[in-house]
Image 1: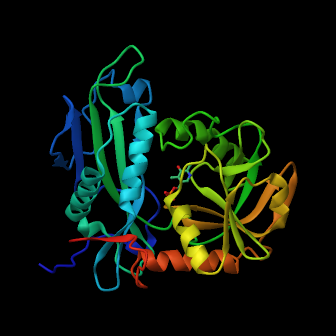
Image 2: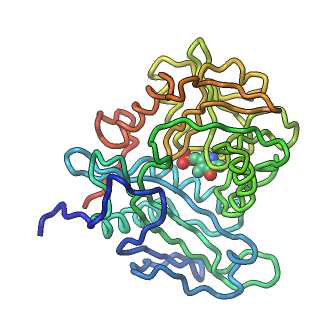
Length: 344
Ligand SMILES: *Cc1c(COP(=O)(O)O)cnc(C)c1O
């Protein structure tokens, strides 16, 4: 058998959607501890009808990508940060979280078992890794479960946007909020995304790619998109990204801030007023799925602020996108220690 044997898929034209692979891994927390986990080819869960994840939303997830390098290695990206964020989400939802070591072990285990689904270098595709934590213990009264499942599934995905690294138009959503100031906006909690679908569908119905949210208290400051952080670039080369207690702390954004500083940008993490949107020369959305999505325009109170007149990504977004993705797929040396090799 050839060691680099791949699944029989058209890796070059994969959509960003779920597709069955060989195995997912599942760990159970019961009686105060995590078990050793199992590998299964089942795509369904045996779930109690009163599990807290179903009625009361004790559910949190993560998302990361694994790339194949030119020389056939498999690279994960800052996985310990995802582990920490899942622990943070769990703490807000009163769930038990996998320790960082268990989290990374589980990811290695499931990626290894599905290595034939890791898209080949240069295909533009990657293996998307989706860790999920759910309350599985039965409750009818509203209180935390006494049993949890930590599951990791993988699926090969193409670029988030079909045309690849291409711009999108946003609309500022003033009739809905993403997260309350003292709520759980910093958690990747399932409920936040159920609540956010309304905003996305509303924006799409009006012909926009996504909604951009303001802070829920004052409706004055830019926060983020439903599943991506926001940044703007000023004419004097500052990378500006909103600072807010309700934003989901994007690992892509954390990485871009470091990279931008090294590329000579001034990095500012601070409140961003809607008035400032006129002052940016480029704006972008960032997250694991699309890395960076250049923003073509933002519509606010009926006026469209246009950043990209020809519909093509600008030089700043392009520089940052190329900088980060070349580290992620091993094209340049990773001086930050962000990538982690997953042994096939
Ligand atoms: C997942 C997510 C992001 C992006 O986070 P990454 O760690 O960069 O993938 C940003 N905002 C929200 C609301 C998210 O759910």
